[in-house]
Length: 299
Ligand SMILES: C[S@@+](CC[C@H](N)C(=O)[O-])C[C@H]1O[C@@H](n2cnc3c(N)ncnc32)[C@H](O)[C@@H]1O
Image (tube, rainbow, N blue to C red; front, side, top):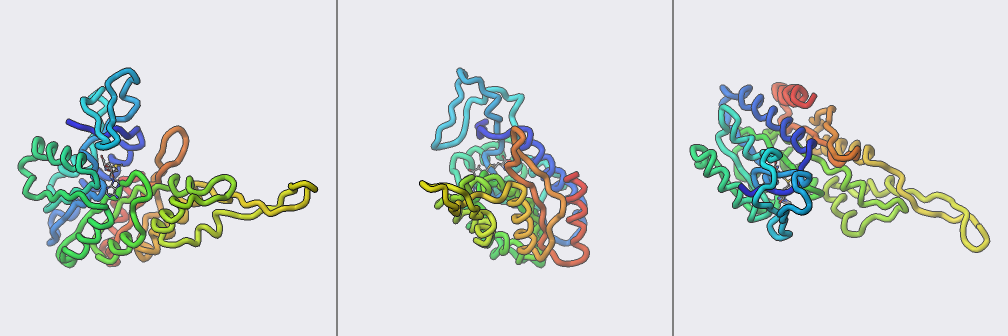
């Protein structure tokens, strides 16, 4: 098996939450007259190994090209990924849509699925697209009066566009777990108030607005120069928690306020890198069940 080299206890925490939700969801909707779909837009290769599982001198080889490691250094530390976990849910989903932008990951996932879940292969669709493109295409393809779906957005960084969230919300039929990269947002503003020229526009796209820029940087008066005269100096005025609050407010806006208040902060070495959030698209009263289920698996 080829695994990607990433992950930590926070990865397992995130995956456990989503897996518990999928199991609860599939059970709760078992007798409902809908086709249930699981959509994994950044599905990966099917598994990952924390980098800590490799000793430096061991054959740890992560080609920049493929992002996969093989052979696996310590299989005890193999983290089973979201796609494979979804395939273990019982009753099974009517369809599974697995996507990743990297060919090596899609190929590895295909192989794992063929080896471990050959009886589900007819229900699985694989694609190698940008996640936004994949989700846009799915949202326009299905009849959402007859279909319900759980979407997992698990990017490494700022890959998911706000517009994609709006499109997902417009189905009025999907539940979304989104690992929001709040540290990646924060990181685009330096302590001295410079917004990264490449990263800043990515934050704009992820939040669907550039108004965060007006708050994230302030100008403060400082004494300086040859005659120690007052000068205005820009500086960063916000922290990771602020980006988390803004992201939650923006995702909530896309989903008509249907976002779970509880979120799961995740990261390593005491740094919050991500925030796992849950939003649901269906405005009907009955659909509030989704939020109840999500809350139960999150806490
Ligand atoms: C955190 S990993 C996903 C892990 C996976 N959910 C699991 O449980 O193993 C993020 C994945 O997103 C993929 N990716 C990066 N940019 C992407 C994009 N624009 N569209 C789709 N996938 C992307 C990467 O190749 C990587 O496999």
